[in-house]
Image 1 (spheres, one colour):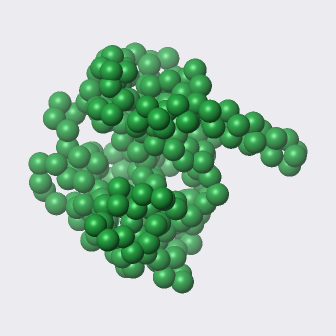
Image 2 (cartoon, rainbow, N blue to C red; image 1 turned 180 degrees about the vertical axis):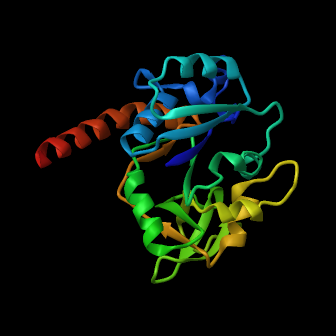
Amino acid sequence: MKAFLLAAGVGARLRPLTDRIPKCLVPVCGRPLLAWWLDLLRAQGVDEVLINTHHLPEPVRDFVRTCPPVPRIHLVHEPVLLGSAGTLRSQAAFVRGESEFFVLYADNLTDYPLADFLAFHRRHGGLLSMALFHTNVPRQCGIAELDADQRIVAFVEKPDVPRSNLANAGLYVASPEILSLIPDVPVADVGFHLLPQLVGRMYGWRPDAFLMDIGTPENLHRAEELWPHRLQSRQTSSEGKS
């Protein structure tokens, strides 16, 4: 199984920290965010991951050299940002021949069960499955509406008048067919340019899992407080099942 891990953001809201550390290497509980992601991918059966870089790529290269061989990491540098969908379009060869693949935003800290997500996608048979969560700030998110079969029947990126509070979590399982729908524009965004085209052909998944965007100092601080408890809870649950 392959995954795109989109990590090229400059992390403007975390400055001055991200003036010297790329956002994907910002430490959470003593480890780079990217290390937590690679642990998750390894545990969930992803064996190859493509990571795009832009701001401060050298530290990312140095970090990757120290990583275990699984998942196999492909680094792709973008001198000019292409946008989330633009990266997928430009790197389509990475998933050529695959039946499906993950698309993940690296600025999230999460323990989402990706293997369960993949099983959900295969059961429903859509072109894309989107992880969703309930948000208190729907105007700041991509907002979806579901029917009784969990099909996404409406999606609007950052709506002025939100019609639900089900927000895009920035985790997808997709079929390669979606790549042909990405417009050939200099900066193509998944939320604005791709997902609206998939309404009626994609499904929404709402797991019980931890997800936090560490893109602000407040969220980073909160992640430092909550993540150790989440790890302890997972360990206790695992021991209880053994």
